[in-house]
Image (cartoon, rainbow, N blue to C red; front, side, top):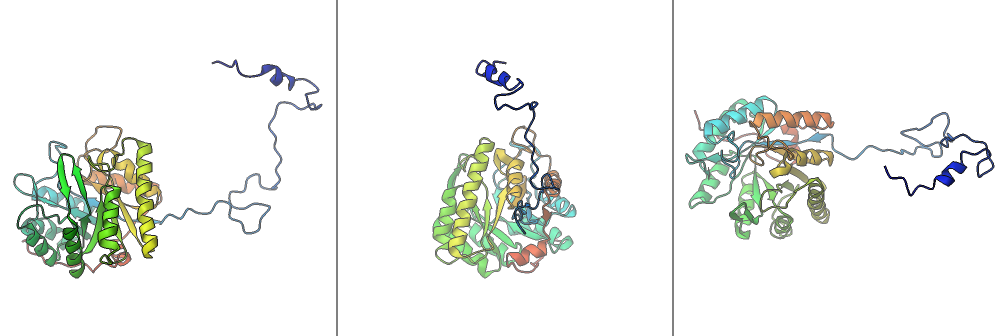
Length: 356
């Protein structure tokens, strides 16, 4: 190792007796305990009365964890383990609820594997969950892509299938697919959801989506408080997080912008859910837990368990158990679904049951 820039002549002067200060000290650190009898008091200082030198961090003890079983994007090509059939989706939702998940987020697919708004398929998946776990929060993604699906969306909402549903304020290329929610669509959907007692979730893929939500839903006074945000970055076409530094910077930018909006609107109970999305996957939600935010995990948002490996998720129960352990290790208690309902001013459990 090169040490050519160290002034060894001066260092060696301090080995002499006397040293340059005329002293006769050995080589040693300076140690003067001014706060005796404590060497280092982790809580107080001797020079202050009632001064907490290391106060607790302002992080909520409880965290809401949403388990998303399947989405609209990925197929078995991206992950061979991806649930596609109604029975696969139902069984994985039941398994997560059995293991304690307070919420499941549901999409359904048709026989070709594409996302559809089919009330009968939703009932097939959700009714068994409602029957066995009536207190759990059910979220369904109601994005009408095809002709006639707007009416089917309203039927699902009127049936009380869902307690909450995302309002995507998006205009982006998701992968190679253009995904745009026109302003009048997001506005009308928000109105219908609130009239039917379904809590809207503002789902954003980029900071532009945050501004769209602010302009069309919040500043207009349409969206009821408390605001409920879902941050879903890192998908191709969303805000990129190609490394840990980018992950931290991007998420902090989202959170700061959302908190600015809440402060302006006087909403001191805004809740933010961060998804384990894209390559950032479980690292992103772990960082969110450290920030005191809520999280969403599962097979809708990513195909990978970790960002630094290509290990694919086996099933939703795996992601739930992994997340539950991380929460416990970080001292975050998973909130009871009824308590979260009260926090978000959501309706009591209910809904029509149709499936046998």
